[in-house]
Length: 247
Length: 388
Image (cartoon, rainbow over all chains, first blue to last red; front, side, top):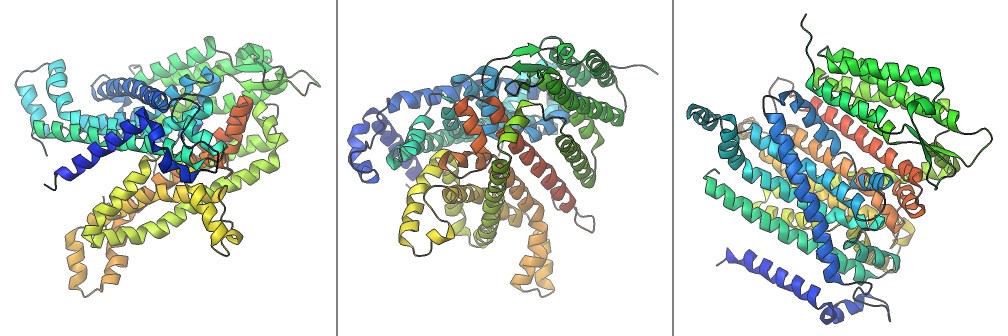
């Protein structure tokens, strides 16, 4: 019975989130005590549902691109052809993580202008690192016996990559994607400072008009999304690990 | 001797060629906001300097292209980077019409691309050299000294970013102080609170999951929201707790930023303390118990030193993260380099954005290099036993 509790809690959280997004008005009494009189308690400069969907779309697009590029790069540097790049790519990842997201965002503006684009670039660059790092770790730490067996069975390099290395690395890769998505969900809110349509708009509107209810609803939606997506990807990860039979 | 190409060298050569042939080196703008005219290296510099720079870049690229000693590559990269940074300052004074105080010269994409290409070469050479920790810190100091020298000598004064600085030099250093205080202060507070909490979580098992899950949850709240949410409670504390306002606790400003950074810092510190303590070999603990050490002695003389590298790693993560996140404090009046970033975004004055972003990146980078060196120096236990 106890094992079901977290699942039920998450289900409730999801239902609550969907209910809030579809009909924010019915939650007004809850948020009303947080605002000064006459101030709106529910974000009124746009639909919360639209902003949430746009937020998710931005994060999804950036993460998808980051996943494809990061995995390709990680495969490249672990092949004999790209082995020369392996040490450098490690230190680049290390250096790249010292770049603050705000700085990446701000520096992308002169290159591509305001709006969605700098946010996508910042999320993409920032999302690359965890996925690349994890894929690299997975591909370089495969069990030696399995690799020997694959070689012994006469698999070509490509077969080995597609049928052995990638499937075995999948759980760790998913863990990287999970990390990347969680960071991106939060970082995307900062994108609103450069006029991207994300949930950050709600928070910034709240900061500007000193409206705690706005800040709270913007922050909580992002937080709940992050928790749900994090848990969902963790579940996929566990499923993959179990299917592979590795602990 | 057989001459062999370096694969990374080919990539660097392509990037550098892209920077020289397909992008502008500098931009001349009639004022700080308007669009400007792009200038190539030869247009931006007098003939001797322009050709000199091109020849030097070509030589450095050639050194990158072939397999040679990493020291030679590092020297070539350093020379190219130094030449580029000096040239951009020279281009600024060369391009600015005499007596025109509105015209602005900024580095253009070509400059950044070239900088990236040769920084890549330097990073690769450094990775291959695997310098010991003290040498890495020395390299950092030399780089920092070089930049300081360029700044003091005034050779960058013609650049737009320095003109933005010139107009607000006092404010810049005040905000820099606030930024560092915020980042370091919240780190210090997090270590002070996180270490005991981590030790407690290590010893009391049932606490562990609860504390770590709660801290994990805090991390999912986006930073601007957490900054904002804290405004309310802190304003309330300032209004009701006597003496709180006198301590500088206020609803907006540095206080909520400090608390938010503190909360974000707790997870890495607590989690790594737990992991570090759990990684202490049981034999070490048994031996310590065997020679009659008290619990406290064991903690400070055995467990703690062995867990130190892992805890230091957390401090590195937190410091780099805090330096970056402190920029966001500007949105709630907390000061820091973010002030320039957001002012610049508001005025679409990109050089002002740079004035905020470049020091932040430099600070985060320097902190990462220094702490990495510290971690490496600490992960070797005296008798040659590896702690990791």
